[in-house]
Length: 404
Image 1 (cartoon, one colour):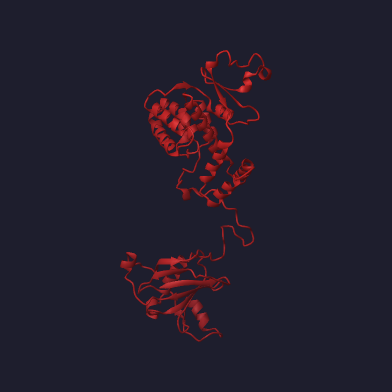
Image 2 (tube, rainbow, N blue to C red):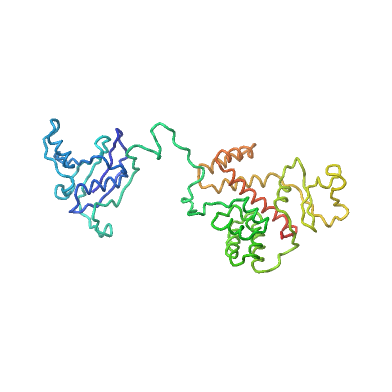
């Protein structure tokens, strides 16, 4: 049986949404009404249902049927009890009839019985005890026209979220919980392996892999059994992500996991400080130095006695081999970060807005404003900070230095 919804609440629908039902010989009109209301998403069933058959016979509940039979207007008809009458006894192949749900809003359906019977086991795989929809098409309107839970018919629709629900991007359950960067940094800085593992496990880490990687060596030293799966997962993620410095960090973590020495000169360089010096404002400074004995990072202003004082100025000329000079990078890496962040957005409309924002002059300002407007400031900050750390790590590796 094909059932199409023609309209309701004073509106005509087109194209008509429809469903195809398998209806058995013992199924009543009450069974059919319930199946139709299920298939067309009626959640408030405290309304009357009525079928009008060819010839005008009315099928409804006993009380409503009696009222119709005793009314002055309308055709003279004998009502049929909806609860006990079987569809197959009153209608045959090819019959067309009407079903109306809610006699106030008049959700009107056109019902047509197929000309050929179907074998339910062959079509459905079972013989259903009630009428069962097994095919369909079209959008089903809400029975009260509500578009969201608190729709009062006058308020504006709530703004669409800037990011898809975690269930839509295979991040459910719990995987949508992003690592708290401040908690992660604190755990790494205090060399607290239990705190580090608690901050990482059960959370989304893909935007913070460089920072997570910094805590792996300590975790392996203190809690190797618990830390090994985390280390392997981070190494695999770094390899798949392939961002700036990811290959270098993956190699270092793999060596640490195997108890091997890191390749090259090992220094305890503060990557956050180095990344800030490498990619800071070029109008303030043009570069700096790394102490190859201690790993400390100095802005070039630290070498000028006029700016920092004779007592604290760093002398890089007396021992030139002790210092590694670096120059500040340009804006190209920053633009690539914005492009990469835009590309990773699942929402097509949001991705296109971000991509348009970075076109032409003023790209950085437009992008920053749009990120804040869309509520993406925290994800963006975490994303770009991790890429800067990776570039700092990569710069050191190119100079033969690994971060200890």
